[in-house]
Length: 220
Image 1: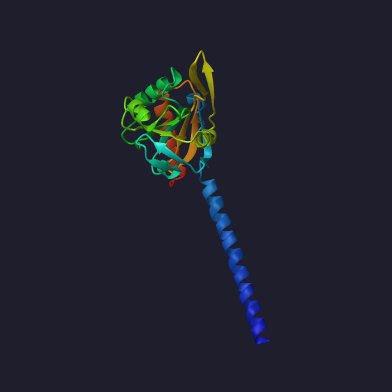
Image 2: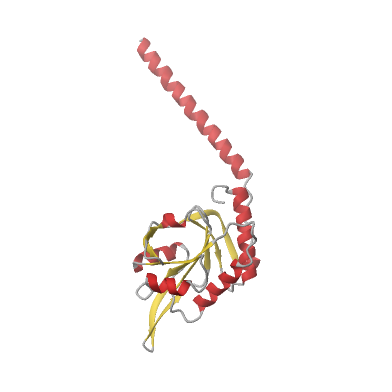
């Protein structure tokens, strides 16, 4: 009988502790939520900011140095990501040039971001080709290439798509033209639609970083 009573008491204590923990956890969560400012409204900068970062899929791809990298390589820094290809005749070089100019406008108080070209044409975009192409834009410009299906899934997670076609014997790739901003947790935190200007990109980055630092310290 004593043993039964003891077991019952232990179970009741465990239930009380569990309920207490749930109540405290809920109160903490509500307090954090109440103190979290909504994502900044940046439509004037053609930018949409997510309240919570969106996770990217797992991947194994090659960077411009020919090294195999995973999604972990995107953690620890802010990254402007763009889906395109090195043989692109217009949109890609224009967008990367705009990002290079925006980089020059970034205040020294902000973390230095990386700039990432995710290839939509891996057959021609070898690591050597990416290196040759991206060196023109700067040391903070990097590339990813590799399996086409993996690249397509990564692009999709960034709200981007691309389609291959041939025009008069020339291989072209139609692709999305927006830029995705990835936070140091390796999550997509914002989408920046064209038209892009260096000033607007730098301003959007500063506003997003400051909001993230105040409301999501780990991601900031």
